[in-house]
Image 1 (cartoon, helix red, strand yellow):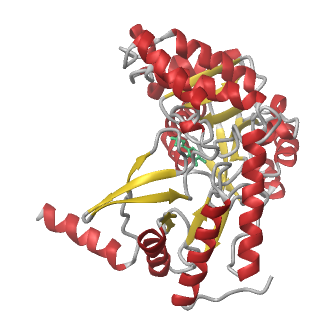
Image 2 (cartoon, rainbow, N blue to C red; image 1 turned 180 degrees about the horizontal axis):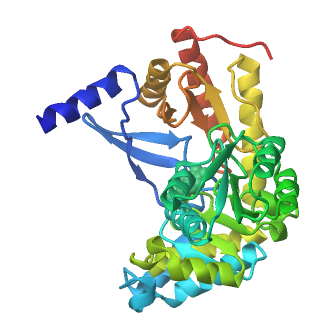
Length: 404
Ligand SMILES: *Cc1c(COP(=O)(O)O)cnc(C)c1O
């Protein structure tokens, strides 16, 4: 076999379908979210980022930056080892306490990313609990799916956000088998929100453990940024709350918050926790500062909500279709991979507006979209530019408008 030909053929197929991914080469500006410099063949240009998961700009917030700088001065660069072998820095311990407090749980366990936390925690729980059966929402994130697959536990996929279907699937299962129900609060591509209370009612009736991915909600919802479960007063009913430090908290890392025993169990048995270098202390310190800030400041959340509302109003005025939801995510629907990529390219070239096209396999074919995430730091001028440029391109690409 000619390996190089194989690789290049596969890539050509991707290109032909419009699904080849090109990364924007960006240099974010310290303290100036959402501005960045973009590097390309012809030089550089200034862009406004409209698709970041640094939802509140905390990755450029003075509180976060100061904590990271202080920690570098104090502790240096890396952690120096796995958590077990010299890598547990006091910054990690403080962060885990902060996270346990955020979610009202006894304990929290830190991982190098949200992806790894889902993969390791679900994989460990489902494989180590004898006879465990997993009940996974149909739209769960790849990291959960991989963790479940890795566990080799029997898996039942219930219809997305459908507690009645979950109930049916749980009823079909041996009442004495250990069960784990895994789902998300805010689903990141459609921006819809799970009926957590109903899912908990069903799960509790079947004596199932519950595992909630709040990655797109932590920092953003609830009076202290504890997520949708905090907002709805449901944190104590969930067995495990999982989150990331890389999105609204603006840094990097992932975690689970749960009982002391459950965290200790995962910490003790999860390969993805044990055999990897701990996060740099400065990342942990930055995340702690960011979480602390968002526990007591509602300003960023309110400004973000205002900008989300303004964007939706402006899109309604010009008839550009977007998916309606209750969250902070505005998916502008294009429905064609090539047009989606073209609009994104032209926004970048002509207007300095950066919105990454979201294509298959991240979303189903025919639902290609521009996933826009307004932050508290986008200005009215930024908004004018985005909406003006979108309107022009919508006509240029002969896409349908919709009467509000
Ligand atoms: C991004 C994401 C993750 C992974 O979190 P990272 O910290 O980016 O690795 C997990 N779950 C969901 C739903 C996500 O969107």
